[in-house]
Amino acid sequence: MKQDMIVILDLGSTQNTVLAREIRNLGVYSEIHPHDITPRELQALPNVKGLILNGGENRVVEGREVQVREEIYALGYPVISVDYPQSKCSEQLSELPDQEMLKRFLFDTCRAEANWNMKNFIEDQVELIRQQVGDRKVLLALSGGVDSSVVAAMLIRAIGAQLTCVHVNHGLMRKNESESVVKVFRDQLHANLVYVDAAERFLGKLAGVADPEQKRKIIGGEFIRVFEEEARKLEGIDFLGQGTIYPDIIESGTKTAKMVKSHHNVGGLPEDLKFELVEPLKQLFKDEVRACGVELGLPHDMVYRQPFPGPGLGVRCLGAITRDRLEAVRESDAILREEFAKAGLDKKVWQYFTVVPDFKSVGMKNNARVFEYMVIIRAINTVDAMTASVEKVDWDVLERITNRILSEVENVNRVCYDMSPKPPSTIEFE
Ligand code: XMP
Image (cartoon, rainbow, N blue to C red; front, side, top):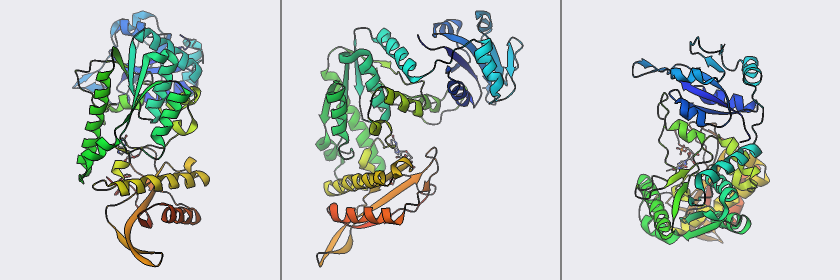
């Protein structure tokens, strides 16, 4: 293995990830593990150079203070503590970020090398994947999102033809999105890719369904069914690749931190599909996943794409989905993205998209009265998607987009700009 590692033991700090980032920023790989890790589990981790006992406000769990196992101290690792009174530690960090002391601990006490970089990370993961999988086969649901794309590229590098990717096109993808998945993964990376055009099936199930929650349930449930059907057709698959990333694990709750929301990456596959998981990105933060994708040679657009909800355009074609409005969302979204990129706004604005409501308004085209749909443009900035502010888009850019939508998109005679921050509005409309 290429990389040295510092292990952070979570003794109730809310700053575990901040500390892990700090150490990685200093060039040393770090992982966060539960306070009650056993000596055997710790010794199984590669190249551990030192331990940080990271205490904090969540140290009391169910009325008892959490402690590390006594045997850990006998293993011979240098140990430092933060906000955790422990006489057996060689040193104590008085506060985060005490950078100088942290550097001394990493480089003088632990003698860790600053060898954490994406190249080394990928080489190590490739080796670990090969060890785990051997000559057996892995299945991956490849949505085309950042995380699943990066996992796919990593698995292709590690095990090539032993990987089968399944891309389910639910008919609610953005313009050319599925085509780009096929082009990149099948044509350029030569992946074993099963492409399932399930658009008709999804649209059939969604016909006449106007309730947003019901729509989401149908899309999520149908996705699992299609994926499961494809999985059953394949022979001898033992593993399921997953694009789990570090925030998914943190948000799902640790032994000391409360759950924020549960994540299930393929949407809760049935238990009788018995797979072992392969999750090579599970220790990476989002920006690191992107850097990993770039290093693996994925196209910039795929790696830096804006967030896109699982139910896709289905939650932007408001109310009961109809084909004409779905096309209007898809075409107007493509125009918006093109014009934002031309104006350099794609690098500045966090998320931008169009929606089409399920009512019509009166207009005039070629001197005749028309009764058609409207397109609403939304462009927001946020840090964590919990609150959001509206981007003040230049008037000329908005005019250009409006003119293009009105002349190029069928069944549309009106364009509006959404001025609502979150809260009280949410980012998406449904
Ligand atoms: P809201 O509408 O709740 O959206 O303000 C917050 C962020 O989450 C995205 N979003 C989703 N992402 N699956 C996802 O992966 C979903 O079902 C989903 N719904 C909303 C939304 O695009 C925004 O970035």
